[in-house]
Length: 299
Image (cartoon, rainbow, N blue to C red; front, side):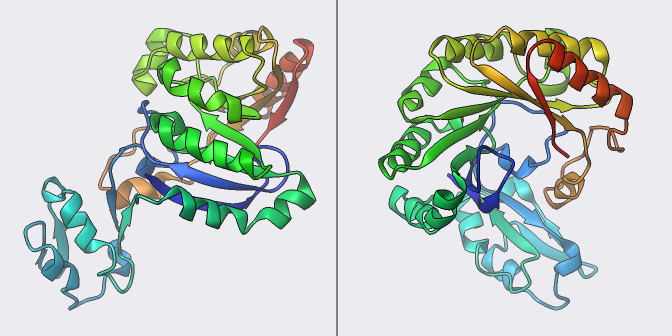
């Protein structure tokens, strides 16, 4: 299942790239900027600002879960199974209601991707799988990467690596680059903010490096979580110990995805202000360079 396809990306691997976003994630990062990606099943997004007064098309499509009260649309999300979400995909003329997540055949995906071949060839670009966590769908990830390589395309995956190795390994023969998150090394802090196990991430990183897979480390810098010199130094030291890592990308925290939580009727629990600490970014760059890595900051 995918939830988006984005063209003309220049920050997710070399050249101009097409990003395919796979649905489902094994972590629960409270700062996630794509909360619609986390569930492995379709989600309903609702923007009341776009809702048309007097329109009852969604109520007629799904009367057991949607009703109006004092002109406001009330949605009982507990009643929204896949069959009911399917009935809502095309009913809203203003797109106040949108269903996120759809099944798509490999042939259809490749047809969409190959429209961008001229941009790949001119820029040295290719295809990047993102999410969510692409390796949550190991068969789709493998098949899509294999099909891309059969077309001579450069392939990459953006991943948190918080999955069993058996879900990663089948894709390796078809992968040119792994863009891997390394968020923290302290298990207690990692679990508090992501509900994950840092040992699983580290084990997968070491296995990838041992297999000779090129790695690019990505570090989201989150205030209160890892936006401090000690955390950054520990992450950089770990990255520098991996033989196939050349670059480390620092991603300062922003709040551009906050509005999506309201669309999903979910609370936003991360800091409410972006990271604004030039001195910390200077430290991160200087320390990474001292450890033999090329640092990059992505806004």
